[in-house]
Amino acid sequence: MTATPSPYALKPWLQHYGQTIPTTLLPPSAPHLPAMAREAAKRYAKQTAFTCVMPNGMYGSLSYAEVDAMSDDLARYLRGVCGLAAGDRVAVQMPNCLSYPVAMLGILKAGCVAVNTNPLYTETEMAHQFRDSGAKAIVVVDLFADKLEAIQAQTGIRHVILTRVPEFFPPVVQPIVYAVMKHWNRLIPKHRLKAVRLPDALAQGRRHKADALEYTRDLNHESLALLQYTGGTTGVAKGAMLTHGNLLWNLEQMLGMTRSHIDEGKEVVLTALPLYHIFAFTVNFLSMFRMGARNILVPSPRPIQNLQRAIENYKITWLTGVNTLYNALLREEWFTAFPPKHIKAAGGGGAAMHHTVVQHWEQTTGAPLVEGYGLTESSPVACFQPLNSGRKVDTIGIPAPMTDIRLVDDDGNDVGLGQPGELIIRGPQVMRGYWQRPEETAQVIKDGWLYTGDVAIMSADGTFKIVDRKKDMILVSGFNVYPNEIEDVLTQHDGVMEAAVIGVPDAKTGEAVRAYIVKADDALTAEALLAHCRSKLTAYKMPTHIEFREELPKTPIGKILRKDLRAEVLASMKKKG
Figure 1 (tube, rainbow, N blue to C red):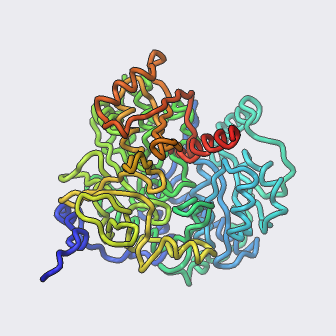
Figure 2 (figure 1 turned 180 degrees about the vertical axis):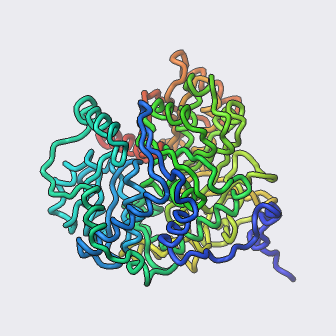
Figure 3 (figure 1 turned 45 degrees about the vertical axis):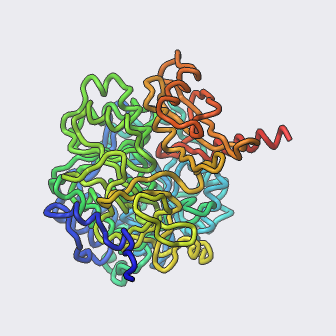
């Protein structure tokens, strides 16, 4: 008797490929990221690469040629002046600004490994990441110099390069922006950090006169490029080891899905998500640099009005965001009254997009809001909704070219078609492992497959839909309840701006559903919301408690933190005994 083949072995998603999406890809032509960046800089030398826009509209820009030359100078400084060696780790800690691409490409051109660091980290978190990575140098913005000063002695960092948000702005504009930040907003702290200013470091590197090409002579696809710290699928923050090959392959995979909608050298991408996060790092920074786009950098999208000048003053053709960012934009009169008409497509990720947000966005702008899926450990993109035929909303789309996906049960066996299972990934974008953590690496990479911890289902046509995080699933009287589904129903109510759902211990049912709501309408009541839910949810999925909040805990990119809400509940229960 012939065994029935696994539905994933048949790769039904390939039917969506065709003239616009290649089934296979040639290996990236560039041997490493600096080579890719140099080629793009040569091709688009005179074009604007990055423009940093402040909330008041003041801005500064760098051309491709300027970014290329400055990053060469920083590479010479790191290797020739600081004496760093190939493979040494160098941290980057700053919001979106013109210094970021100079610093990141300079580190990679030096043959060093970049350590992307969240600038909002506490001193404790900074100390952990710098010690764990073994960083010997850092390029840091002055907004957080006092925190670095407090913990530097606990780390191996011996070379500090200090920059400012308005670095490389025009000479007339830079002092104005800096004065507002320092004296009016009081954002820049006092410190006694021993550091060299970034422009001075570049000048010293320029005088060094070394051939920056020599620093990358031995780099290849297997060389480590980035330590991207993440809680991952196993808890404590650890560095995902992403190689030059991982990132270059992921660029080709993304472009394979989107190239039909990208005009090389002509796109304008809005980058509101932070570049220190893997989503914006790969999708906005690397891929758009590769394609000669103009990148509009916004140092902080909060409050959402900070995006107004960037959107109104530039002909944005692409943007990326998370559900909360799009939801906030759609509640701004300046955006909805005069929506931008140049947008070709918007990309959503980081967490599940809510149906009502996608629908409202597309009605308002006329541009598709396509959802994708990935994680730090996969560089990040693994799935994407096709931009042409075959797009299905409320899904994460189909696997990117040369990406295999299976859904498995707790024993690692493939689940049937339409059945929920843990999503596992195999492809050239999957990380090498976690930095100095072989045991934790072995927990998530098994026989070449990355176990994501996300539960998904696959339809007959090979389209995938995330059900929820495996660890977020709620077990009510033996039934599986997925918070994403409940949150989507809640946000369909006009009076709800944001929603988060968690499971809480319950004596009768094991766990019960608790919902946290940020109102869009002050008149909204729990009774009205429960009546709305009853029309759309079966009884065991119903929230047993609704709590209204002014805001919900979020990550720096705007992803709602259910774990923080669960921690609150457990702490309260422990206190009550």
